[in-house]
Image 1 (tube, one colour):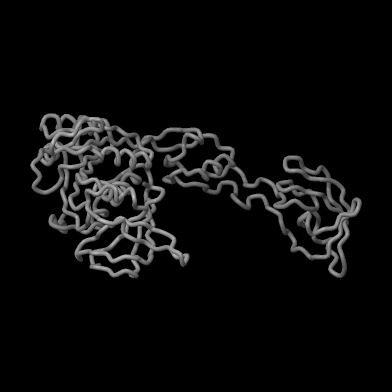
Image 2: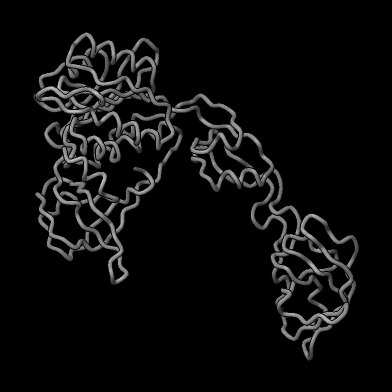
Length: 416
């Protein structure tokens, strides 16, 4: 911790600090293909056979041997049968002969090339064509996609929709995946009221639990919602220990800002090893990370997020999401993509910190993708997150910007 600066830590440095303490869950389970969507592979998937497992036609046409091509005049071949997908032609094609073949049909013995049906003239039982197709044209060969024993998907890969079909094409019905990560979360503060209650003076509805629920649902973890907890030492302590006992990860919102009059810092010092930071970023300056020990042998990871609604979402996407993916079994999760686009409006910003302003990425009338801020950027303006489809990422060295400046954007579509 010699390089730890409690006053201002760059966002990238905080992200790297967290990474060194992450190790994935080790328990695994075998699931059917459909049940495995969104789960992380615990073992490599190797191809049990060649894919495709036989030479076949990529087009509807006629299969023949390229040696029969007449380079000086039209090629004439006799059609001696048909090869369908799933029903091979039983016989051998001799010189001067061809077979009508459908897409996916097995290449008959003695053939190596397919000419598409639109390129030939059929007269009776003969075809003729003038073009000179390349040898092996329109043929898909055994093992062209995957070879027997080849690694298809590696351990740590999160299974997507395309992977379901790929695994099924290998004839594999079940896969080994890591168990679901268990995540418990709760909000803290006397000012919080639950949805459906009447607000008293000075109260606000607890929105953070709902955004956290949505973000966690996208990750496919097992969610444990422990509610909104008032600033009561005993209640907060019992809730924290219950969360640590039940879950691999505990997330709280509120109670981590410097100088806040609450009990969370004392409880975390008593039951865990937690570091509190001021991150050089906006929104989301206060952040806590560490371990909390419940009654179980293994401590739970802990993330203490700010109380402001937008700051909760920004810190989740910039720190918690990647950490969750690693805990789920992904060794090196792909970072959220960042693109350079033109900003169409002025931006106010102070140097010395990274800002994640909410933006709207749009296709302009000139056909180019551009971005504009959603409007007011306060960390309590949750409507800005509903309007936004990206973050405008402005690093420490950037100050005020004029319209027309190229900026970096981090697309949110697909994760929010």
